[in-house]
Length: 188
Image 1: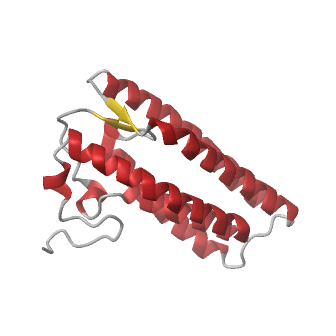
Image 2: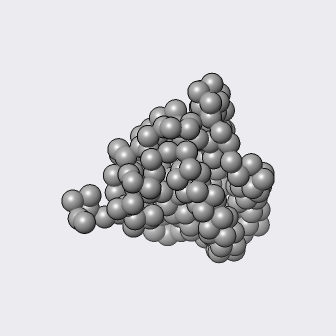
């Protein structure tokens, strides 16, 4: 139980801190003429993440707070995923947000993990939503929220890429980058 609540509370605190950073970045972008698109689905993303944590808590608690036997391996992989996610977030700097906001005329960020793929942050979230429930043997949460997140990302990435193409130099800068599978930036 201690392991579950330690991880659970750390993850909730992490998400709340990220929302605070997103709010600050939103104000920064809006101060530079930032335009938000895809507002209609933002509430559903918030509900998906709240639902994920509720489902994880309920499923784990009703099963007696199990922890996978090979949890050290999963925990290490999860730490690597967190590193990649925060590398993506810090690479975007003030342009990172939980909402889809663009500063018209801004240049697309192509540093950090964005040198290798278009959506490293989404890739990390996909892995998180699988690894966290796996750690606690919450297989219903793993399956359900992996599918819901995939469905949500299909829509969100389309909206985001349309906005990137409209408001930035995305098409010319990122055309040689894969969406999720990293590739060597030297490959053509």
